[in-house]
Structure formats: structure tokens, C-alpha cells
Length: 157
Image 1 (cartoon, rainbow, N blue to C red):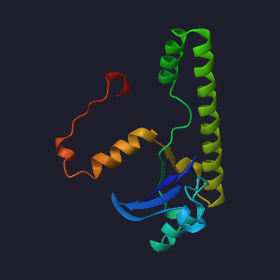
Image 2 (image 1 turned 60 degrees about the vertical axis):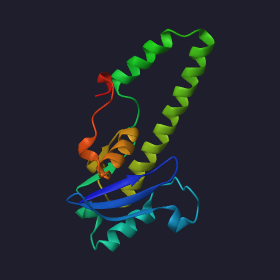
Image 3 (image 1 turned 135 degrees about the horizontal axis):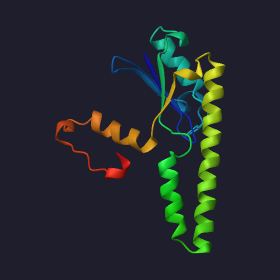
């Protein structure tokens, strides 16, 4: 049983899958009436569990489409790219990176605290690249999936 969650900075929600089949899915805003609610999806998770007649302890994996902080090789590529820039551009790019890192820390803290609050051990949490999750959603729901090919640059494989 896989619990998929999205928690932040906007459009939080949850879905429940069993053997690759989608059982239930809902966004947190449906319960809170707060458009694009980015808080931890406590009510969405509760709904999915209740609708499937399962408990939090039945969850085998929690999949979250947001990797916390950059992988070392990605950080190195960014540092190399920054070294090519002038001082003002470098300072601007570093400030953007710092803001993204702050968002990552906020999302990670929210997810870990949220899982603790509903009794799901953090050891069940698996994080996935956000943009690859979008791509996977397109591929796995496409009637043409067998005709698609990998067009990513070699360094992102």
C-alpha cells in the first residue's frame, strides 16, 4: 500500500495506491476550502485511509514528489555554472538558490512533522524528483507510453 503525498509549497493532497492501482486521491483544499492549500495534507490522508478501510500502520511507503536539497553532483554543476558569472549575476543566483533551499527546509520539516503527527514512521518516506514525477504522470497515463523514448541529457540519467 503506497501513500502518495504532495505537501507544499502549494496544492497539497494525497492518494492511495495498491499494486499500482489508484484507489483514492484528493487535494487538501477540498476540505479546508483554502485554494491551493500547501499545508501538510492531514485531512486528505485521513480521507484516503478511511475510504480504503485501512489504517496508517498499513502504509508500506510514503512517496513524496519533492527531493529535499540538491544532490551533490547537481550542486557541483550549479557551482561550476556560478563560477562563470560576473559578481552581480553570481550574487543574484546565489540568493535565488538560498531561497529555494529555505523552501526545501520548510517543506521537509512540514512533511516529517506531519508524518509523525499521524503515526507513520519517517523511515517509510521516499522522496522523488518533483519534475520527474510530473513526467512520470504524463508517461504512465499516456496511451502512447510504449512509443515514448528517453530524451533527457546523459548527465540527468
